[in-house]
Length: 570
Image (cartoon, rainbow, N blue to C red; front, top):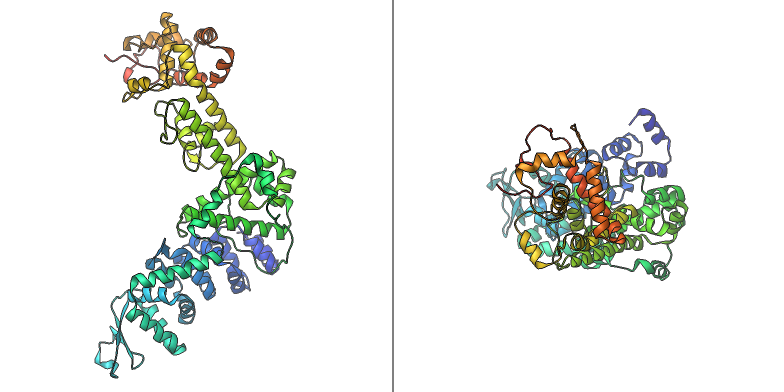
């Protein structure tokens, strides 16, 4: 950050500094905090989630300066979020965080560990030491000093693991003994008597309770965030909920808790535009906090590892994208209407609307699959469809439907969440094209592509519908017969000459061939079917043109590399 930006930050009041920090990259955030005179107060004003994701983005190895300013409750929250693999504690991550706290000193490390559940600390220490109960007082000098320590007459501690964390654990034990003997004795008793499975179970129960208090529900309760509602009855459903209060309530000196990293690359969404244009600072904080609560549910429902930043970002992006989809559906793209709907709609309900719009699309895709003679609940792909139809349909048939970028010109060829109504419109248009194909092939070629016999004939042959259609159209242009008869390899050069413009490369499909295609379609198809299937036919012709456009007219065409038409084997 430029010095000028840093000066602007330092001149802000405390709440202004907190608002300024929201959404900044983690390292930039750290540098600004450490430059501020109230650095400790800033860090301690963060929710455990905000601090956690900031530290994770920086990396535990470089997070010590901020972590050393945290209060014990924040460190406990950090352990809750990062140091578990579902219901099992991840003690390796716990050690990493302790080593990051080394520069904070033994007092702060002890504060943090004594704040944690005794069972979790006992599990960690059991990897490093064995407790011997001493019935008779013994001198510590009876034992090798590097492996044993004795602070009182009741317990002898034997160190069984030596690594960088051991020195921190030794300091913690000494500090705990000096500070609170009852705690120290209780911990050693837990290490001595405890059973790992029971310690893990009890620590997990405590963790779940804290997470639920912080807006992370249990797995089964979290599933309702994906519950379907009828988009056509949304306003009626919304009327049954208590309207949220925006821009009201005390301002306070702290940001509401954020559950995950802020989105840095979604500034052009209608949701973000409405948030920025329609709400004062307090309302914006309330909405961010509410969005965080929904994101929490999504993370739990999808069983995301909170420590996996990439998976967390995907879940948070999904939360934003489906909220934006729901808002666009309500507002029709109008900003003022979007602001009014955002003002009166609980964000969880808005997210469920986005989910439901996607589910309706999946149901529509399942009906398309059924029209191809396939079982919609079992078939996730139709292998003889061309790209992007095959990938796009597969994306729609998933449990949580996804949009294939290949439907949108210029977009990356990858699956992603539905973000906007445009994605829905493109997907519905694609399904309309697919719905026309059984009738197109039946009327044009007398071929029932929805039959079992058709699927049996092409099984194992890697045949695409575009190849079937283009082969018949090429035969019509070459021989005057609309038949599905593979092209002889020796005819490929003559085929190019007949179909493509002279010269080149590059060449284009000749007008004479387009005329042949138009005449066949007009003769065999009624007008409505021609209109419905026009984009599919056009996409097939584009495949043919792209394959032949750059071939040299005088050079023989190698049939091994031709994919647009069916070619007879030699």
